[in-house]
Image (cartoon, rainbow over the protein chains, first blue to last red):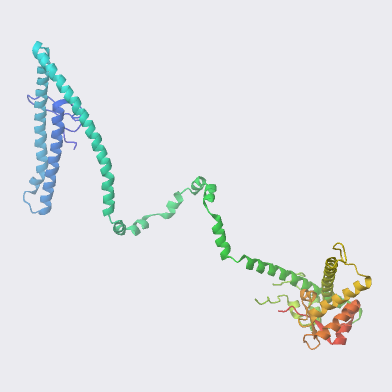
Length: 289
Length: 155
């Protein structure tokens, strides 16, 4: 909340006889900083609780509460009061801390009392170091505990989730309708993908033998070869037969001419006549099947 | 699977007509080649047989006398013709050229008639010349034995 003067970086302004507390909370050491952080946390929690309560009351009777506006202002007002109180408390705390520090410094310079204060400091330092070590150990233990606990929680949640029900509840069709598949495909760089594919490695992973065997099993290669060979052979034989027929006709015409013989009327004669009639057909048009 | 139809109009029109000198000569030449191949096979077979029987110290081609060679060739050629014409009406040569030997009435030749016809053709190679001169594509042997050779592609 920007209005919160205790926001890190924001100075707390005080008035009157209190000490002006200008340092940010995170940078303040000692008791005053601790109070600032604790009070900020308390104020935040209280503010949230109040806001939630007021919203709940609003939901129970919307528009029916005569003092609705007053009620809605209550969280902010409470927060304002809390902030003012925090300012006072922090000011007092800073003054007390400053005075105590001065008193301790003065006491440390005295002959007898100074020794006691110094001994107290050392004792405090030892306990502080021990406390810090314990705290570090606790942090490590806590981290390990969270690291173990998080997957367990995730697994437990996944087991409880009905993925199918979630998927069914998703409006997949409407999502897909909005997707421009052509544009999506257009953005895909196929060449780049293909360049990354290691064809040799892919081929070594493929077991071509069974695939080829399956193809050969389904295709009757023998029948194809027989059919094609038979067709080609048949074409060649037909061509030879037709050309021999033409040679027969030519020889017959020559001999008929020499012997002054006329074969008109017979089928052979008609064939001869067809030979004599100019045709668009190519001379070697065997047209066999 | 039935054979494909004849698509060439002229060839289709001439089916059943008497075949000319060129077709018949080429068919007979092919049959002559078959007979000669059989003759060479016979020489090899007899050569092996003679080695097996101890008549020769190694396998050598049998070399009979000229008269035996001529006689064997005539017999083999006659056999090729006869076996082809009796019944099916086709030797290998006539099958390739699309010809068929039939009686004048269009029936298949009997074995005796096929044998006599084959003998005449084997003994008198020039007998086919008359086919060209006859005007009806019939040789002397066709007239004598009342036979004919027609275009028949079997479709």
